[in-house]
Length: 413
Image 1 (tube, rainbow, N blue to C red):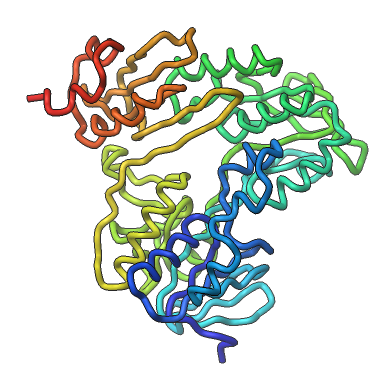
Image 2: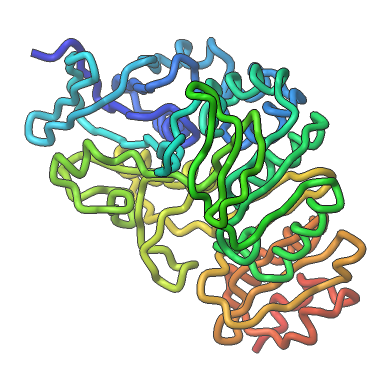
């Protein structure tokens, strides 16, 4: 017998879960809705965690997705501190960590993922931190008061954003990246080298092509990071930013197709009846990835897939087809990305990198597939149409900053 039951049960209360509940109500859905979350907090924005929230520029109230009263006013229940561990797709019931059950008519899985942990010795020492939840950042902030040296493992966006904040706090900061450049998995070499130079100019020690052997400590707390070559980098704090592990174990165990995430169709439906998946944990076929099956870790994807699932539930199916976009704030640099550079075979630099305002345009088989725009809002806004249209434009024209990108739309035969 279930402890409760809802017409739509949403597991996860991040961007995707929150937007799904909002979209259902906006679409006129009158049935019962609940969100279940492992955390103690009401839905809040994740990107500011490694940026404004960590830096102290925004209090928690300013990163809440909606005010507290919003949810009750719309009859959306939020069940906090409950981790869903089992799904019974036949009985339409989920079970939480305490053994309590909740019934559902439709289930939306919006769990995102957990910060990937190191697998080496010392990974569990005190002073080792991820940056995935508010609780993560609150713990990190408390310990920073007593730390002088910080080592960041991982040269992706999370790691670099965290490093920039640590510099603001006047810490000695070292970034370790296993590949030969930062942002290697998501950007072209010109952008990587630019950000490497920016971080070094701000005092960050950037080590590329290095492997971590283990973390060393005093038996309780971390005191340093030992590299594969034997060098030990002293540290009171270690921030680990090496990606996420999609939180889909319960769905996979219940029989859903997937692996690195759970597979969904263009309406965000999993292979289980009445079960949807959205956001970071949903693996889908994406037009902007040249038809490849990918997971997208972005607010845009979470929100747009949430709306797709909600529309299907209310009987207005509209297949997911949204151009991806992302952003990153580091120091006084605003990076805005539109499209996916997966499989690019040509890179065009638009503008002078030395001015710290430029764009990197990615082409695949001659077509524009993505732009990385640094302090270049016009290029970002105008470039979206080039990506959506998959336009073929001469590199020389794309590089010419005297020609607005919008002028290429409609000019291509």
